[in-house]
Image (tube, rainbow, N blue to C red; front, top):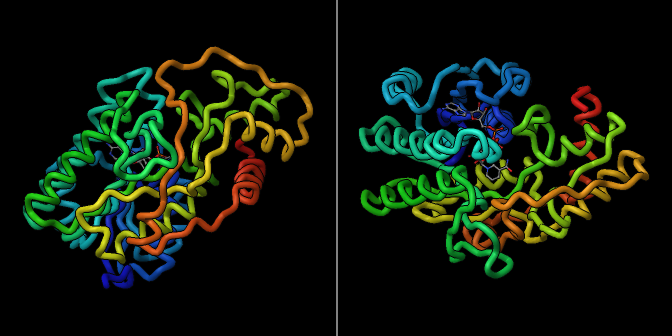
Length: 322
Ligand SMILES: NC(=O)c1ccc[n+]([C@@H]2O[C@H](COP(=O)([O-])OP(=O)(O)OC[C@H]3O[C@@H](n4cnc5c(N)ncnc54)[C@H](O)[C@@H]3O)[C@@H](O)[C@H]2O)c1
């Protein structure tokens, strides 16, 4: 069974939300070296404050789409494993659809070609539940058809196809992990790419009504970021994951109305919220089938949503981000 201990690991997009938690977990688990490559499109250096406490952590401010740059980093750092976390958030699809699509495909392409020339051994590639589109049945297992509704999701689905095909052709050491909606400390809270949890908390703090697009009955399977990170590491450690696509979620979905209620309760807000027009490309329901993650990885989500949302909102408040 492969182990994290002493491995030399590269995390693309490691200064982002999930990637930075992954860097912390890998270092805490005794990785030999953790190398983060991030172009800081959305990543933040402060997300890496804990990682920088380790001598065996190195940051490169580079674009993972650059084959030559990535090759020289891998040669220099003698990388064993790559966790591919780099992307540009879904909402970017509404401003720059082509780039939102291409970034996912191009980074996967570079990583696959580098694996082919022996630059590293194992790729844990991160997909997204968005690749499925709206649920045709629920919970959505890995057999559910992919039907992306945004260029971001199309890019994720296309990258998955490419990664899967390389894995089949060359029998490579590759796993594709498909997380559902993540939440937790460090999720971007500012600008048009921010997620619903920090945006809502911020509006309440500023005395504005929280906003829901649509009727609020759309659902998501929210998984706490530290559970996702545990699942990604389990995917590396369990070789049953190789050449497979595996969901990571909780198996429970929550409506936006319920999410609003929980955030409002936690922040002591007793007013109403405002409903705005539904975004046509938003998927209606997402709930993960997690049987495969249980069987192949021994994965169980550990963080109950009420507990996770409290930890998340406390973190935003303590860091003065809301
Ligand atoms: N957050 C979620 O709810 C969620 C759900 C499912 C899947 N995912 C997947 O998990 C992964 C991490 O997502 P996240 O939420 O941490 O996103 P994030 O935006 O917080 O982090 C992505 C990081 O990638 C970096 N990046 C973007 N383009 C780059 C490039 N060309 N070269 C180098 N770095 C680049 C960004 O600067 C950022 O730091 C992504 O693959 C995403 O699709 C996320």
